[in-house]
Length: 189
Image (cartoon, rainbow, N blue to C red):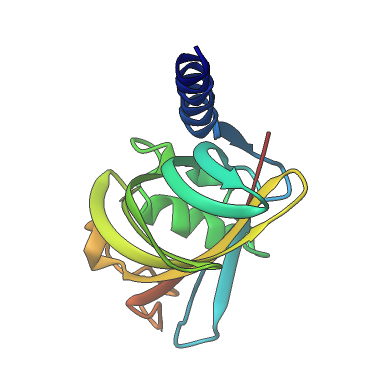
């Protein structure tokens, strides 16, 4: 009798242990404090365009105040929410991004590998101006009381996404080919 009682309790404990591991995964939503930017150069000056209008979700496992797994992550950023301090620059950027046909910039995670407690190597697909490319991104993570903060950047080029570097003033001002995409994302329950 004692042996079967012990086996029963062991089975119940194992079942609840497995169930709690499975239910530790939760869906988090991107909050309005998240920011995105793209920076580059030109023959006139360095420039940066910013947005705080992205939406997205992440499926995360956070246990004992630590991020243990990133199962899914998807972000959508309306392309015309990315703005500079000059409307003329915004107009040229939207033409370059082909926003008449490609309303959104998207990112979808393919895989995530933990480097250490606060650093992850993310592999995902960026879709910009209708062209999709896979990039690896080193991201810094911080578990917060509400969820997770994720920060990182990627170096890309206009030609990676089938875009031409913008010019202005009849070609006298030229934009450099290299761009840096930066993100500071907050995912909350």
